[in-house]
Length: 397
Image: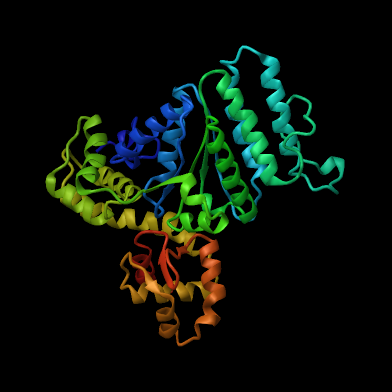
C-alpha cells in the first residue's frame, strides 16, 4: 500500500482511531455544555484510564466541541513539581480570547484580563528580581485586590468567577481541560476542588474536564472529602471488538482500500483493543501490505516493526526514566503477573525480591510519581502502561 496515503499515520484522516467507541462520552459532554450554558447545575468531568486508551485525544475533541458551541476553552497538561498558576493563566487567556470575539464591551474583557494578569503574576517568587520576573504576555494593567492574594484557593475562586461571568455575558460558558491531572501539586488540586465546589453552588458557567491515570479519583478524594460530589467520573478503557474493528475499517475505507477479516482478527490480538496500539499496528500493516486488501500475513510481517517502534517510543522512553532499583521493582511485577495487564500485591513483590516491604516503599512511591505504576487500592499496584509487563519480560538486560 502507498505509505504516503497511510491513514494510520499521526495526523492522518479526519477522525483519529482513538475516538472510535467514544460516542457515549462525546454525547454526554454535549449535554454538559447545554446544561451549564442554561445555568443548570452540572458536575465537572474526570476521565480516567491507562496510557494508550486515547484520553488526550478525547480531551482535545471535547475542547473542539466547546469552541464550536461558542465557549471559551483552554487546555493544559499538568507536570509534577510545577505549579498551576502559569499554565492555568495561559489556558484561561486563550479562553478569554475565544469569548472576546463575541463580547460587545471591550472594557469588560480588559477588566477580566487584568484580574487574570494579577493572578498570573503571583507565580513569581516574592523576592524575585525585576529582570527575573515572569511576564504572562497580557497587554493590560494588572488589577488590584482581585485574585492576587497569594492564596491559591482564594485566588482561583475569584478568577473563575470573573471568567465565568464574562462567559455568561455572551450566553455561553468556559471549559478548562486538564490533562495528566494526577500530577497537579496537592495544594493546587485542593484549591481546584474548592473552586469547582464554589462555582457549582452558584451555577456559574465554568466546567473543568480532567483526564488522568486510574488513581486520579483517589488523589482528588484525598484532597477534598467532597470531591466525589464535584466530578462525574468516566472510565476510559480499551475498545470492544466491534469498536476496534471500526477504528481500523473507517480509515482504511476512507482510502478506498480493504482489509480481510483474518487481518482484523490479527490486529485485535496484537493490539488488545488499545487505541494507541491499534494505530501502531495498523500503520505498520498498511506499510507492509504489497496490495489491496490487507491480509493476516501482512499483519504478521508488520508486527515486529510495530513492536520495535513501540519498544523505543512507547515503552522504552518510560523504562529509561526508572532507576536501577525501580527497574528491579518493575521486573518483579512483570514476573509475578506473567506479563499480563493485572495488578499485584505489594507484599508479593517484596517476597519475590526477598526484601522487606518497607525497604521497597521509596522505589514504589517514585514509580507512582513518575506515572509508571498506580495503586487503585491499598496494598495493590499495577502498570499504567498496557502490555508493559510483556515488554519487560521480552527485554534482554
